[in-house]
Image (cartoon, rainbow, N blue to C red):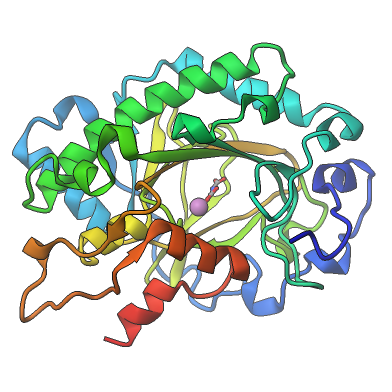
Length: 351
Ligand code: OGA
Ligand code: NI
């Protein structure tokens, strides 16, 4: 399996000073940022906020559960990860992306594993591409970790990735307990379903969205739901870009200083029998500023069967998803690329 066409680095394109973008990046009118009919009907709202320091209270857990039902997304504050560490990690990724192309190409990825530096998802020849580059790496299980593939520049980056990852895993462990309670399940339920602390998988994707001369014609990242368990996004706190689907609208998330953004992925949607929603999101670009974000994907052990919790399956609400391992699900996604309607959504629709 290899890329169907030579891979073009979007950052280099952007820096070449072009005034119009190549047709490969031009989306059909209905998929462009201003393309959805009802865009401005609803007053813009930001996603809910969850304060980790308050999550011992039943009311706060209820609010978080409601955010997962209504939005599938929330900001999290008092998450225990230092602002300094977050800034350092982001800065180190910025420095990596600002390296000459030759150097970055040493990490060029393939669609076999996606590990490394890349500029596209999916292998469909002639596909319309997104306006972004990224670096993808495996973090857990440690047997899949491959620090030889992690950026060697800036020199501190490997250590920062490791340290940031371990902090995010701790945060995810806490969130998993509260998310379980929010479903009326035992606090260990979700983590156990993921294979426990020893079993979980995790990977990271640093996203680079270069400034774009025609931001109205393209997207930084096409609409998708995250296939894994849950995602912790370290956004660019200076440049908005992430949009979340809410009814017929795309809501632009306003980043909050020091906050992280949490979203429910397809696997927790399955385990919760769709009480928690894995919601579509996308990224828009702009003509003034590059944007860098770091997505941390927290996933179930890849060969465990994921299915709706028995406690959440009733006669009125039967199981809405087929039993499937995360490996099986991911294989399906990778063949098809990031776009399109997820299989889970289709099975939801057919019920
Ligand atoms: C992702 C994602 C959003 C962003 O990497 O899956 O949705 O703001 N990223 O970069
Ligand atoms: Ni995503």
